[in-house]
Length: 466
Ligand code: ATP
Ligand code: MG
Image (tube, rainbow, N blue to C red):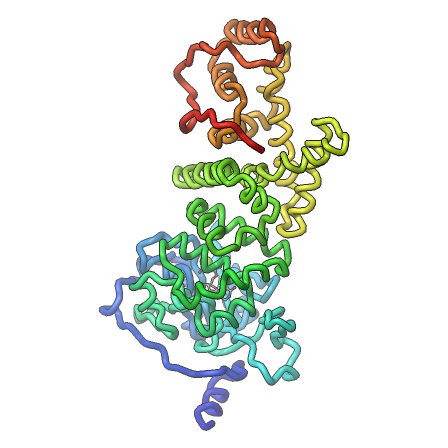
């Protein structure tokens, strides 16, 4: 009681933390981190806040990743200063906030995110003020902008490995949740009772998988156990938040591994219900297409190339299209309009789960439309298609379908050759098409392969059964 009073006195922002524990403090010789390994700007932010009399630490992903020898993607700071107090210290700071208020300190293109110590919603003092966190019937936290002290801040974080604080001045690590133990043992472990923590925020299930894939860690068994049962709760998460999370899952360079874990933990179906159904109906083709698309994405990221979410979503959803188009055809609709309508319906339905913005749904449709147009090459059509800004994505998508075993009668090779040919060769290729029994048919089987642009991956002639 006395301890509690003392703590509340010491930290006027503090509410009511369930349990207190002193952190384990690791001095400079007990760990491998050095301040020089962190962004100069982030270190400066921490030092200025400390000089102004606040507590401030580097925290979360940057500490975890640096310990593991991974280059952090950004640097987060946790502090006792409120966002307004941070803004008062830095001319280049802005207060932002969707789910909760934060300060962003801008240094050219680098943004240091500065978050005030927060608490994980004390229960029982609900009426205390309007900044209180609130929950729905299942325990999900709806608002959580409740300030707290550093211990509270550690306890409200998701995983033990994300609750390590680095004091840049003393080069000490403050470990409130045995995070160092889990870093050493390569375990993703929730802080507190796993079921309760997933109920509070089901997105933590996705985060568990994301960190396991990124770090190549196991999910600790008590943290893993409830996931399959609770996975359907993802259906209640706002679609805009899920869009952000899905991009983090698939655009961080380890999408293929992430996908395997999502499927293993039954998390894929609540995100992509139609694709999950297609995977069940036709595991070989759908699985190959999706995995290949994700592997290509990972390769491109590893090479520092850009990737577009549109291509990724086009691939994730494509296996669900044919069954829908066939249903419409069964009701008497001609093939092309049936495909168009199936595409429209599928995207509309998917957007209810994951709010894919229009700037991506439009190119998804264009990539799919290209698949209808690439076989029709006669006359001037082939050259017109080459001029189409979506040609490259459509062609890559065609190769992906072929790699997954779809039979296209050598269409990918034809387009590869066409791009590598000069004008007169191209005219010859179009003439060859006209000489075939089917005007839109494939090029001669014995077509010579040229150097230059080559297909990725081996050819496969397995039939597509969807
Ligand atoms: P990365 O930036 O590499 O994706 P990260 O750990 O920094 O990983 P962020 O999403 O940037 O992840 O979040 C920063 C920190 O905020 C996390 O390390 C974690 O401590 C905390 N955090 C983020 N999301 C949640 C959540 N849903 N529940 C509890 N804590 C969270
Ligand atoms: Mg981060």
